[in-house]
Image (cartoon, rainbow, N blue to C red; front, side, top):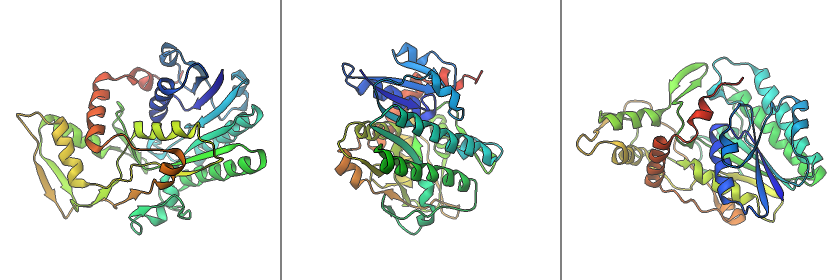
Length: 334
């Protein structure tokens, strides 16, 4: 039985992805191994082997299986959105040292391939200059702001993966992620150490209460709205394609305007008897429009987005009601 090892399985994306992989794999040939830092029985209840590992500590890897390792997925990492106080060594310990430990684990145990989640901030220099972000655009890192050092550490991992690909033949798949939309019980994040509510979560809450919703900036500004389950599908397909790897923009390739986003949230979440109304605020600060070029993911991985914008909202609503991962996400590190 070949093993697919997922690091970061207790994270927001990791939980969805591990669950998705476990449903989709051919269980006569493959099994999932989940790796995280939290104490949880969630994966055991799914029939998935689970190990608690601090990836910054090489000694922690000694407890992991070493036989029949087919693929390794690296979703582990420290994000600016989760840090109240900036500390560069937190990024170094987890994003760099931890990721090198994962690469070494893959190499030593003869994994066929590794999948990695990169930040789209490595193309920050193109934001506002290119509506369509191509996976082949040269890297233009930010050198100021709370995402700067984070993007630098993640980019070092990408370069390290290329070294392992050329030096050791480890197939390497990099997925450049914009904001990934999903239900999670924590609706807050940090920007430069300041706690903020996630914008779309705030709008959903207003819609549920039937309150007026302000629409800031240009109603026709657009973004590529990627639902977590389409990301899971894209990464799952990378497990089995017969290529050496590549860099792929995670997205849908579809432009969803600000107006469409808010109207969709009202349609799905507002009570029929008390629908929210939109209040236009064109003088308020909006956002930079973008859409992800997913053409090489379509060609190489046979990726085809499954969730339209309204499909995503309805599935989000279902996940919000089920709260499948809440106990694990809300548990403390002990």
